[in-house]
Every structure is written in C-alpha cells, then in structure tokens.
Length: 284
Length: 277
Image (cartoon, rainbow over all chains, first blue to last red; front, side, top):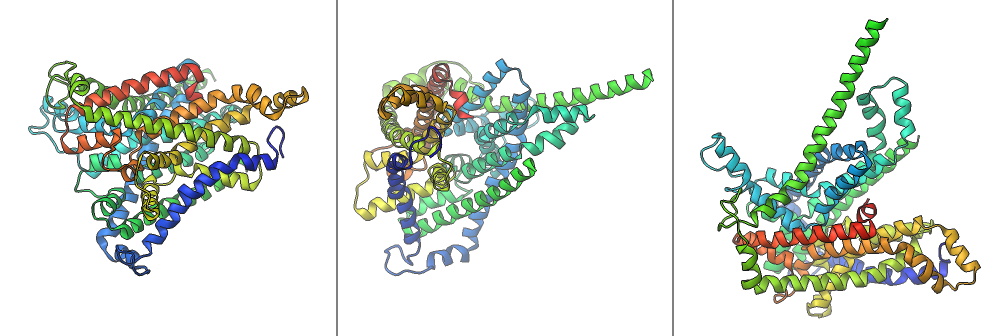
C-alpha cells in the first residue's frame, strides 16, 4: 500500500468492474476474432491458415497493407514537421497566449473527424479554395483533381491528427529543466545549437508518444481514408468493412483485422522499446 | 576589442533573430493550418448556392433551415448519437473512476499493466474491436441494438476518463485524506467530502472528452449499429460519400458551433485544456 491509496483488497474491488468489462467485451471478442480468422471458409467448417495464405499469397492484398502502413508513416512524418514547431512556439509564448494556443490545439481534437475531413473536401474540391485561387491567378485553366489522391489523404490526415502529436511534445518540452538550456547558453551555445543539442533530444520521449498516437490513428482512419482517398485507393480499414458487411466473409475480414492489429501493435512495441532507450539516454 | 565584440553581438543577434523567426513562421503556419479548415467549412455552411463552392457566391441560412425543417433522418441520427454517447459516458465514468482510484497510487507491476491495458483502446485500431464485438454478438445470438452499440462505446470512452481522473487523483495531497481519517471520517464519507470534490474537475474533463469521442466514433458504430439505427457521424459520412449535399456543411456548422461552445464552457468550469495535456 502506498500513502493515501486504497489497501490492496479495496483496490481489487474498485478495479474489478472495469477489468471484467475489458475481459468480456474487449479481450474475449479479440480472441474470438483470432479464432474466426483461423477458419478456412466463410461457413466456418474446417480450421486452418487458408485465410492467411490467401492474404499473403496475393500481391493485391499485401499491397493494401503496405499502402496503409506507408500512409500512416508519411502522415506521422508530416505531423512532426508541422506539429513540432507549433509545440515549441507554445513554450516560447507568454502565458496568456499559451492558454489561447492550447485551446486552438485542443478544439480540433474535440471536433468531429468527419467534419474536419469534410473541410478538406471543401478545400480541395473542384470548386474549392485551392482551385479557385489558382484559376483567379490564371495559373491553371481547368480545375485540378486534388481530391482522391494518396497525397491528399496524407495531407488531410496529418492536419487532422496533428493535435495528437503536439500535445505530448508540449508536455515533454515544458518538463525540460530550464537550468539545462540556460547552462547551454552560458557555456556559449547559440539558440539554434541549444535547440539541436539540448531541447530536441530531451523532447524525444514526447515526440515518440505523439508518433505512436498519430501512426495508430492514421492507420485506422476509416472516414478520412474513404472520403479523401475515394474508391480507387483502398486501405485496410475499408477492406475490412467491405469483407465483413458487404461480402459477409467473416474469416477473411477477421484475418485482415488481425493483420492490421498485429502490424500496428508491432510498430507501437518497437517505438516503445526505442522510447525506453531514449529515456535512458535523457537521464544518463 | 570593441569592433570584434560588436561583430560578435551582431552575429548573435542574427542568430537569435533567425531562431525566433523560424519558429514564429513555422508555428504560425501550423496554427493557421489547424484552424483554417474549420473556419472554411463554417463559412461554406452559410452559402446560398447548391454547391460547396468557396468562397460562396452569396450567403443565407437556407441549408440550416433545410436541416431543421426537412431532414428528419439527420435529426434522428443526431438524437441517437446523443443517447449512445450519454449512456456510454455514464457507464464509463462509474467503471473508470473506480479503477482510477484503485490504480493511481499503486506502483506495483500488476497495476501498471492493468493501466496500460485499459488505455489500449486509444492505440488499437478500433475497427478491429468493432468487428470483434460484432462476431461475439452474432456467435452469442445477441441481436444488435442500442445496448450492443453502447457496450462498444464504453470500451472506447473509458480510457479518457481513466487518464484525467488518475492525473487529478495523483495530484491530490494524501495528507488531506489522512486528516479526514484521523478526524474519524469513514472511508466513504472521506471520499464523498474530500476526494470527490477535489477530483471532480478531472472526472468532468475526462467525461466531456469521452462524450465527444463517442459522439464522433465511426469505427465501432459501423459494425454495431443495426440497419434502422444510424448514428450521426455515419449518416454524415454517407451524405458526403454519396451526394456532397450542402446540408453536410450545415450539419458540420452545427457540430463546430456546439463543440466550440461546450469546450469553452468546460474550459471555464473545469479548466479543460489543463486536463488534456
């Protein structure tokens, strides 16, 4: 028992309801999903690895997985590029401005992702702001097709998931001991050198936490992938949906879901291990 | 050497200036990028035209009127979404606050593991969980209903409440509770009069974020809502995907306005942004 915390017996009573809920409605279903993926045919007659063989034996399927993971990776990198300067700007800003900035960062997170995806359709559409600006400038004659391209999905997703990157980085940056940057300045390092040598390395744990959130969100962003990507660019989430709801092939849908789940978890685990290393580096 | 010193200070001035300019410009661009799309949708929702042309050729509230007067299916979807989010949040508050009280001050390995297990829905592709629950319910012969939808949403809302409640409980000074006990307060009385009032803002902030997450969720609802009951985000997704109806802009306008107002109210009452970090 720790000071002020409940005794172990009480702690168990308090934690039991949520634990039971998770066992019954998260882990049991996920286990069942794994089980269903191990049936050879949609009628669930014989068990085997036919679904996995089907997935990995077909370049079409593997390509969808690769596209999904590469989409998530590109989105994460772009979110770092845009989000990190914003997080750093927050630490430079005076206190009053910080409150406003934080609200500007948090508000989109609370606003519906469908709405924020729709915003990108309005922006990138044939009559959207980008096309009308380019036409007014006389740079193009006919509207460009900006929607329904993989690049559009990356840009929209990076903007939509950016707050997930910015918030943990802000936490990491504000936790840095100001004595360290002052020491760096006193020892003669300029602002840039201090940033690259002290601030950036010390913020890596927050950066990695943000990367995990953005990567996981981008890999399973059904709404943005379908609306901005259009029908021609298929990613894992919509493939799962089609196989389950439209084709009723539950074993194959379950296989796709397991593969997506395992891929995301694998990335999360690797980054977590790296994160522990970098924390060791920070304190060492 | 005064000349050398002047040159040096000029160099450091340039160095400092370039540093602040770079972060000011990049950070400012990020702020614009973050806010502009929402503002553009809000402006578009007041268009008088039949298209999503931006900037709009004229302004009116016709699409808001169309939404209110001749779109019963959208209003019904919004009502269903509110019901599901309210029920899921209420259940998740009870489950997650209890768990947070138990886990917050435990340093043992089992407590850390349970904590990351409960937080896992934030990292998992929720689509997989939605499909998994659908498979579970159909194997058990349970028909899809409001209840099955709410169950799915409890799993996705619990982590938010767990996180904010844990954070405010950890900040609570344990001597306060020891005082209450020393003065003879029974555990439940001490909880009601000391702990709960102090962690209430954390719970409220978490519940609000959880409510919004549930209200916006597509991944789980996609699998767990039956043909008759369509939640608002899926309805909106359908409208945008099939017809690009301008009513989608009006729905977006309502959601943006409601979210902003609620968030500002929560910011004033419980300091929402403090709990998000």
